[in-house]
Length: 412
Image 1: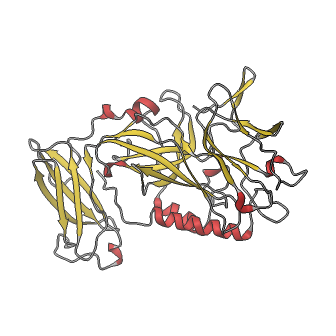
Image 2: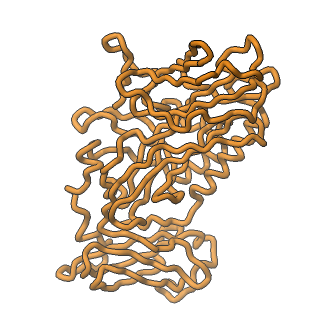
Image 3: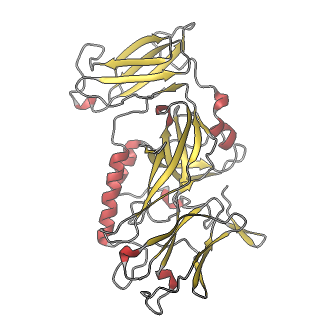
């Protein structure tokens, strides 16, 4: 079982790279969104937005999917960049139809509005990013290739280019706290195991074996920039929280993957109380630095490594020790590990518990992940992700089909 806390450039650096890339684009004013006469740029609304005036009310209507949620913005002055106000924070899409409407009561009674200005200058309708699938009640127990980790597909609601000025900045919250889950693009099976239909989508790799077994809450929190003015305040929106259940045979609650001059703490929990264990530590070159064997009778596995390797040499002083990764193996008391071979989890996860993978989306839910080094290099060079061009931004998109006179999304 691979320890999740590998020390390397991770989410924090990716956020910084994205911020500086967005700042560069902001200063260049290189954006496809429309600019008004003063050069102020605002994000585009969802495609297909229409307006209708009834008395003093303004009725907005747009194509939607029942799974979506929206935020409706309004302003009294078309040339005031800091005047966007949320008229509704999270408007759920209509369920029985493929269009959603919002009524701005007395919207025409705005004295500051310039006569003859189109109504779309005073309103914006943006999609609130959400999970592709209904995660309520889902049990996460690890992917086929990554125990303790699951990929959670999300849609952003925006076709803005990655690192663009109005690219939604999305974070995954766990139990009300921001997590360090890595954002990625993966090929997800939207079909069945018998008839797979892989589509590239964005999402987060949740390393849930750092959580206690049991129920947890997940929620996406998104920062939306509303203009190209640096001083303008962004808008923060969230989707509806979902309740999931986590089950891992080995958990790493309270484990600290970092190390200091004193050493590194290795901590794990087994669902089986009486097991033998072996913890291997590898340096950045993949060479074994230290190995520790032990036994537990209550399921708690604790070991403090003092940075002395198996030859007695003090580690953490060279470039080869810039990062360490760990591997933990456990076995029952009535079995013995084979010497000279790599240990496996002899009491491994019960495959029947993989409800998220085998029962909902099929065993091969996602394909191999892109190597982290390649991903970081791409971001440093500001190279576009080749998969991003075909990513579906929202459930209701150009792939929808006309069925019985109405549009229906082909994606589930």
